[in-house]
Length: 425
Image (cartoon, rainbow, N blue to C red; front, side, top):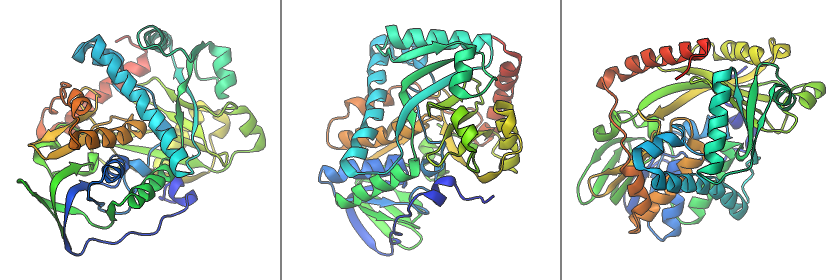
């Protein structure tokens, strides 16, 4: 078992891009080489902007190349939060945008010939009657309020047949969500951005920003002067821009990939090749890869402390879902940071007149990150309507400032206990 991700081991590596070693000028500077930053660079370059992207490490080193590969419809908060925050009509527009984010993935894969192992199909699995009722309500909302009808409630026996696990009492099967190799997709977008004219620099960490009509971004070995800055570092921005630092809290999440399953296990575990997530607040999520491994995530640290011995911890979680895999070999286990907001709605907006940002995808980022880059490019080009809709959402700063991770950990302890006990909301 290694600490490298499964994706890095089984995805063709891109050629390393240069480090920034000079002072350059550009229309736009993007900080962050994940899906938000690369998507923004691609859309901006396609619109004719002179665009520079700075990545602190290698493209895909952060969450965009380390996640579970699950593409989820809607938003982490659930649509009822949008309805309360913005009203039903606006919530329906947000739903349309979330679906557009998923459709954009298919469009880009086809346009650029990206190998991403993309597949639709998703199972939301209930562990108790409370969660089953929640899935019934979600299905009714999705179909009646938002017009999405490609879904079906499954009973215990049907859920067991679909997942290969006896753990769940019911589930919701839908074919709007899905899964893919996120690193392969990101590499393809990065190459497309470069082909469109964007300059991508790796090993070029932004260490200081000087605001003004022209924004100056300093790295250890170079400098960029740009009219507009796009902040796409999400949980990895740290204290670089204080105005947005405490609008999100970092959460560490861990994922593992098993050794290849046997032919018998492959036939019984997820025979329809859907992705699965349970309905707990601190959830388990998993899927089969194209080479028939089980890729499983389900350990999170809300306290800021590193996740230790993730392989054994995830193996125990796998054993709860599939007892026959209690001693399965873990070939790859890794962790990475995501950023959550107080509302679990994403946080997009501006700092001043010429700094744009997108962060706080709260675990639903694989599609929405790319969409964030798209609507930032729209706003830069003069059409800020959709970005402004997100900017008006009531995302508050986390209380406690630097102590927010400790407070978050306490809150999550309660939600985990509620899930264990099967308590109602």
